[in-house]
Amino acid sequence: MDELSGSDLTLLLSRARDGVDGAADKLLPAVYGELRRIAGLHFRGRGASTLQPTALVSEAYLRLFDERQLEWRDRAHFFALASKVMRGVLVDHAREQGARKRGGDRQRVTLNENAAGGGLQLDLLDLNDALAALSELDERQGRIVEMRCFGGLEIAEVAELLGVSARTVDREWQWAKAWLARRLREEAS
Image (cartoon, rainbow, N blue to C red; front, top):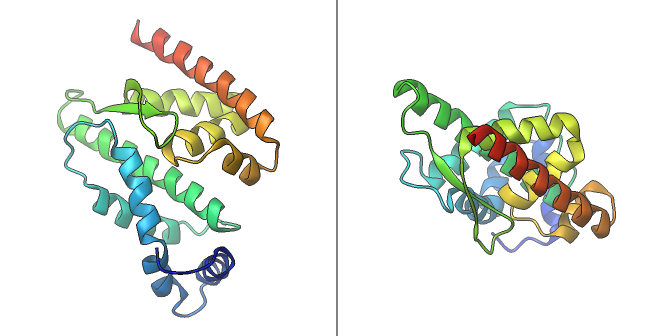
């Protein structure tokens, strides 16, 4: 990422969101490194794919500006939304690949708790369906899973974004992991 302070980046993000002339062009170089790191987290534990991290970053960046309903508040919120958009791109890509192959070769991913790695081997579409069900049940827990697993955010960062205590995030994270594991086991049976 270019040498921008957190407040400078937040200002640039605000200007880009509001459509200030030239701000979006300055934004990409400032956020590209972090977007690339997040894309790498999404690809960790996946097998070979026709979609590459650079293409994922590009598609997610375009979607962030095409979907005007996305309203980021600050740097952390922008990257959390970017991670969510990346997950959507990957799910769309997996569905497209599955449709071409009539259900064969569904993509497997490793669900990581954080950027450190290690995790549960899952089908991307099954995980997406389970996460959607969790989000219907409890939207905040769904967001916690997205930010922890797909965005690589730490408990404290998630707590700050959601405006709750780190203890609350940790407690809900533990519950959400258990719920997802149970749901995915049921689907596998």
